[in-house]
Each structure stands twice: as C-alpha cells, then as structure tokens.
Amino acid sequence: MFIFYLFGCSVEETTQQERDLKREALKLEMGQELNPIDPEGHIELGKIYHQLGEHEKAIESFQTAISLDDKHQHAYNNLGLVYIDQRMFLLAIEMFRSSLEIDPDNPAFHNNMGYAYALSDRFEEALASYLKAIESDPAFVDTYYNLGDAFLFRESYEEAIKYYKAGIELDGGDATVYFNLGLAYEQTDEILPAIQAYEKGLSLDSTEVEAYFRLAIVYEKKGDHLMMNRYLDDFIKRAIDIPSFEDKLLTAQQMRGVSGDQ
Image 1 (cartoon, rainbow, N blue to C red):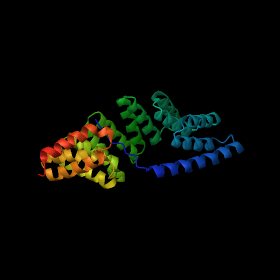
Image 2 (tube, one colour):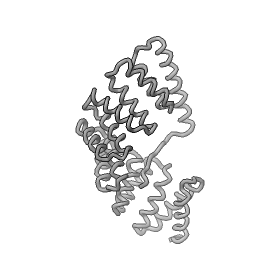
Image 3 (cartoon, rainbow, N blue to C red):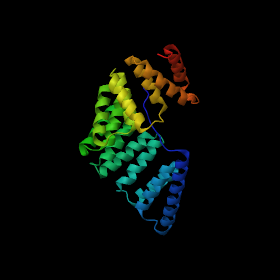
Image 4 (tube, rainbow, N blue to C red):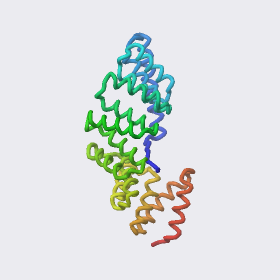
C-alpha cells in the first residue's frame, strides 16, 4: 500500500534553515561552556542537532541532559525521537517508556510510543498507545492521523477513514492527510469522496505527483474520460523525468493512448 509522505521545502529554504540552525547551535555550544550543568541547554542543543540530522551529536546532548537530571522526561522523549530516525525502535520504545514513567498522562509521549510500536510492526501495542494518547487529550490531533496511517497500512480502510476525518474535524487537515484519505476512499470504491479528498489535497499542495495519477484512475472508474485525460496529462508532464514513476508513467501513457481525445 502506497502512503503519501510530503516534504515541502525548496533547496534554498532548506539551506537557509540549516544555516540558521547551525548558528543557534553555535550560540548554545558557547552557552554550555559557560553553564555546563544546565540540562535545558543540552536538550535545546540536542533538538537542533536532530533537526540538522547530526544524530550522534543529538544523542550525546540528550544523554548529557539525562546525566544531569535523570527525571527530565523531555530528554528521554527527544532521545527516543532520534532513535526512531535511526530505526532503532527498541531503544526508542525504552526511552518513551522512561518518559511516561515520569509523566504518565502526556499525550505526546503515548503518541510517540505508538509510532515506535507501529514502525516495529507491533500493531496491537501501537493501537493501545495511540488510544491512551487520545484518552489523555482527545484533541491531540497527531494521534488521529497516525491511527489513520496505521489502519491504512493494514488495509483497514473504514477505520482509516474514521480517524482521518476525526483529525480533520480538529485542525482542518493538510495535503498529506487528504491524499491518504483519498487512498482509503479509493480502496472502498467510494469514488466521489476519493476525488474530493485528492483534489482538496492538490489545492493545498499541487506538487505531489502521485496524486495526479490517482485522480486519473478514479476518474476512469467514474467514467469521466475528459477529467481522466486532464489528470493523465498533468501526471505525464510532472513524472517524465522521475525514475521512481517509470511504471506508472508507462501505464498513464497507455491509458492516454487508448482513451484518445474522448
């Protein structure tokens, strides 16, 4: 099952963000030299290193914070997030468990624990953690979307739709949510809701190439070849130089050739 994951920064924006983060890291490093026993400073430094993708430095910073204050729940939580990025899920789960021992009602910690379980293919434990997050804070929207993704991955489409819609009711949703909602509707043969979800997603982010292909497919199911061809043309134009779309590009060109100008 394909699931959408969107990343929306240009090269220029990313480069500027990296410069800004490195500048902040330098300021904090200088500050740590003046006050080396401040766990908060080490945590902030670790967060910056994490954003920069410098995982070893991030781990060192969070571990230093823990050595200074072994009851600092956010140090454990942030260390768990770094371990997730490194696909060290057992260590991540251990860190989130430590954070929850200190702050057992924190919805973010339960949500992160659920995500680590989900990535470890431990769905029942992931589900339990996600539901605890919602129990702790029914408005914690990230958990609804994570539940939607988890059920979509397991091909439980009705459940995925339920949780995506619950999240959208809370914060309106973003492009990724609407694209994945469209996938769930498409798999249940709910063609009109799938079209509406995909097109809403494109209205929020028109750069997602896969969405044009999916819209062509659902419009073909609807029997609307005019709209199908429109989205086929959009997809072909955008996918032509992207190797990962080679198979879909061939399918789109074949569909376009068969349908002609209908």
